[in-house]
Length: 346
Image (cartoon, rainbow, N blue to C red; front, top):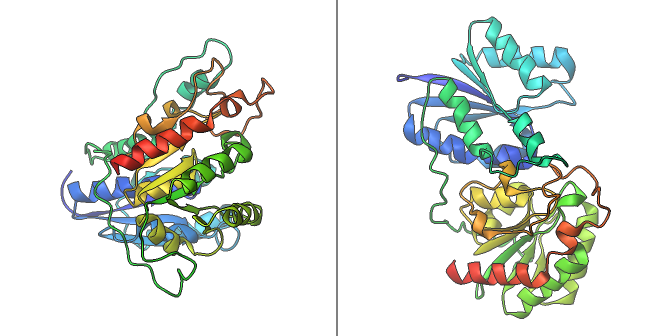
């Protein structure tokens, strides 16, 4: 399809899933520079889409003016004034379906994300598990645009990172200028089954800091802030960035990293936005489910083989074995050595 147009892109949440849309849209614009985007997502995610050509961001407010069915109708009326020519539903939940259907009623072409639910059930079930790599989520996103008539081959490759300048006022807690290798660490996740046990993570952190590298801890909650502060006090090469930066500045700091150590969580996807290589740690979940970060390599995914893995797509199910072996049996030396090996290549 050629010519001009404006595609409404719907991806309301969660943070990592929203972050994964940005590199796909950036690749799309290289193939179709004349097409505009109107991205609807939560206001806090706007920094993900900075510097993407022909893109307008519209904040979704589910607890205020866009709450409930009437709120979605109100959102539709507002967006319709933007002369939308197609709708890409990259969320495929009840809210996005309602909004898409309203545009469909006006004759606008829509395409919806195929989440591959049946394949993922086969991947995570206890009996007759089919352990096979499924499509990457970023590829599924690209297929939505293909269905709208805009085919392109997703390269899914990191480019050379561009370190952004760090404002002295916002980054006063940073040991600057940079004289060591910088390692970002995103050790937390929304679901506990995706978190490397904190006592094991502390051993990893102390080893990496003791090797002469500067570590930055990323997180979001007050509880995570307290944990990060405790680690910070145990070694001069560990600095907590938790709740010290807004998202825009956090991305700037990430752009200056040499590598990120992350769980299967948003930290991996934020690093991908800034073309930073990631060593990822996987427990209840698995890269085969398709949530490996854009441009990241499965070679840098630290995990162990167990008959029960993966037991969950999102890590939101308790361990049915009761021993959390997927993380407890994953050695600290494995994580440390993978980071050091990748760091030597960075």
